[in-house]
Figure 1 (tube, protein in one colour):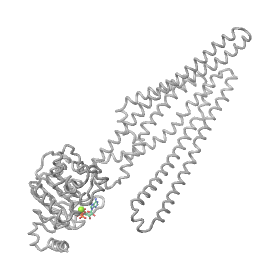
Figure 2 (figure 1 turned 120 degrees about the vertical axis):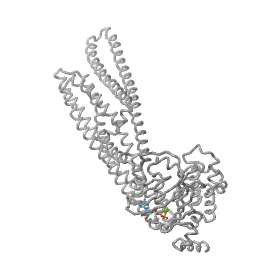
Figure 3 (figure 1 turned 90 degrees about the vertical axis):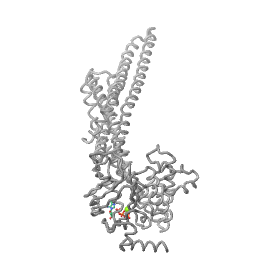
Figure 4 (figure 1 turned 60 degrees about the vertical axis):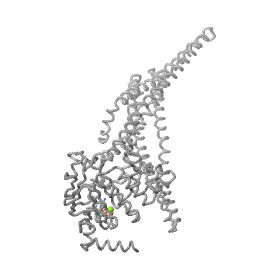
Length: 593
Ligand SMILES: Nc1ncnc2c1ncn2[C@@H]1O[C@H](COP(=O)(O)OP(=O)(O)OP(=O)(O)O)[C@@H](O)[C@H]1O
Ligand SMILES: [Mg+2]
């Protein structure tokens, strides 16, 4: 339950909703109790009047008496109706305060979690899968809302109603009150147990359903492979098997569900029987009137719902605590990628790696061993290397997705750690190896988070990335929506759009991670020449495993298994007769073929 303390700050923030909610709950309950008393008066009136009425049998006064009597009954009826309306009105206000509060808290909590997610480093996202991250922000938050909304509402209702009703009942007749209230705790506990069973089984059903839909989704997205390998029969059989599990679980739940209401009815009925039986004895003893009994029956029925809600509330609150606990675990994760000095300066683009070593924390793989390089502002450095040699790792370190295990990266002679994270990243243009585009228009993908960017700039960036021709052929041009993750574009078009996005923001340092792999050498040349022009006075880091992409660079570094094996210009490396020359000749041959 301690986990829920996290929400107290929100309860304080929305205290007025809570306070008014409590006041309205009390008032609405008051208007619920008064009718019960009116019913007692009415019934007692009927009984007394009837006695008098028969006394005047045959006399003219009798019809006068009847009129007075009928009028009083009508008056009671109208009063009861008015009370019910008032109660309804205040119940409306209760929901308008307490449930509205829970929606506000839900909104705040979602934002808190999402904002926190944004601060967390890549390593966090490697450790936790998307499903978990989504579950925290949707399902868990919904469960927590059940606590701050309905649970608090029913809780307040129970407290105010109990204070009002029970003190009143006891003041009328303590013995009857005791008997009437006896079955209620049993009811509450029964609901608690049954509700827990229902929740557990519903969750099992939910899991079974999500397995089923994952299965179906995979079958549909893999339909081509499925058909090609003639696995339709298997697929259908597997589906049936999963469906059977789902059906069995659903029937299992229905059984408890079916027990639920009869059980409640039984316990309420028991209370009513007790009222009539014990109440009857009290009437015989002259301590109560029939009106009192009716009043008590109304009270018992008034208490049933809050008492049931108590059981429900308890189990919901436990769920909420478990959910909040999971949320708190995520919220307590702090990013290690922070800056103490928070330097927010404009950089020139001098780059230096000093004996950088990097081990991936989760896999323990040594991706970089003692890597050093120096690049002056305005230079283009190319990193060439085979698969898994640590090239993308370099880009990850430079954009500070991770910090080096040892060694240091400096920009303009200042340690990278000293720059304000957002400021330094803003001055870099990064084209990741795996293109990721958003399901937006082409223009918005290029502008990406800079809506104020001029359209000419967008067009220029697209031209530099050699994509202009393609876009002008699209019927909607720059306003073409590119579908989820850019599915409507070809591989090479996506890469070029990703490049346009990076260069449009005029970065001081441009990092291209193998981003020309899906374009032909001709396009590659055009783009590289354009880059040469626009990256004048700025630093570029071009990562590739193709010699064709790197030969224009001022400096080429050949990487293998996380260490530098050769370094120099294209000419120097050719002359050195080493790995580079070997690669060059091999790739030249392939190209000629
Ligand atoms: N997120 C990660 N967690 C753990 N290990 C990783 C991670 N990313 C990469 N590695 C490992 O680090 C090593 C270097 O990977 P890196 O991605 O830097 O290679 P690369 O040179 O970019 O290769 P490619 O040309 O295929 O893109 C590899 O052995 C890889 O298995
Ligand atoms: Mg890579």
